[in-house]
Image (tube, rainbow, N blue to C red):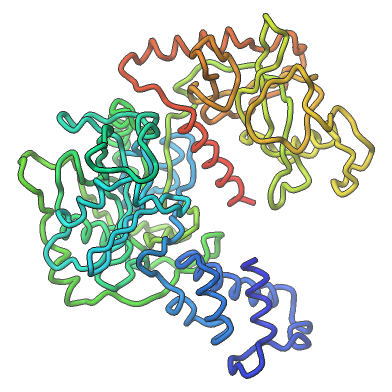
Length: 547
């Protein structure tokens, strides 16, 4: 839709409109690269505007008035009580990969809490709106956070948009609870007096302040404003725990990562702190740096250097900051901007979760179904649904979707092997090793796949850990009475051509691995299926971004 809008308004305009358009005949004479650049720039403007202000009812009237113009970013910019699309982090599989990507740059590591991402808006009249990462209004779900806003606004703060993680906590001790606890909280029309599950908002970013967007400010500055102008209230509102470092501080980063896992977090988020203006832009998928209104300099200079405030209760802050300003790297590398880029997944934010090495076990799983891929993978199967074998019933029980570890060559061969007969696929040899309907011996309660496979292969799969799931039926009744088990971050390793499906991993074996995992970490909170599905969504979003 956004691409279509950008091209329509680049080539045409309504009667009476005065904005400039491109002549299709002139465009036809351009070189392919020149034309692609024109399309890309117009698409970027429309997409960037929509990411900041995702409302077609506002975007289209402005397009009708001014067409494709830089002014779009101002006219359809950040607006209070209209959620912007959140910036996303690229997934890395281990710390060494992260340290390599950020070599020579100052960055901060933050706990990745096992909660719900929230975007909090407050205007000068005190009206508060809270949105989820999927832009759903959830103000009624958190009346306690709404009541908290007047207490956390520091002196001089009139309006703001901040972002943080809502985590279930023990109010007396501050102990973090798991995501499942948070999901047990009512979702609508919650009365403060009826709340039984307390939450704490761990703030990590500030995108708008007193009428000024902060998206184009580096993260270090946005964070300084957040921590200097808002009031910390222990066990209610605080900052994400963080460690400032460089790639030279690998031991400190490793210890911080371990402490995050010990604190029942999912891992860490790693973010670049500063832009590097002295490096030339060499071209990459991150796109050009966006420009926008500058901060009121007098307000910034007056407030950004002050220390973080804390409301009574005493105690030290939970931040462990150790700034290292080693300056820009000497080598010429592509820039990693520290600006906030709505709806983009960039290497300036990296997500490091429990890596595969934490689990030395693998499973031999059976591919049973798949969905059509997105983008360049549209003619292939991705993701692919995998299952374990129930020895007692003979059924195949779905355990996870997998879309990691595959090469393009594998995707192509796999599409030919599991052929649904679709002529548009480029295979076109008729149905092969597939079914139009789910076989009776397959058990799966999730969304309907685009194709069902004939179970005939065994794939070895690595994973980070095993989670309880309301969607997947694997080992249901063996671990939990009414829930099955699933895998976090499944990754294809190889085909087990030496094994038939009767030798695939069983649901009993999966349950035994789960019990062994729980015994290794008796204090760890049970990870609910909803959290596993959030991870699955993250992987799908990351894959889509790569396409």
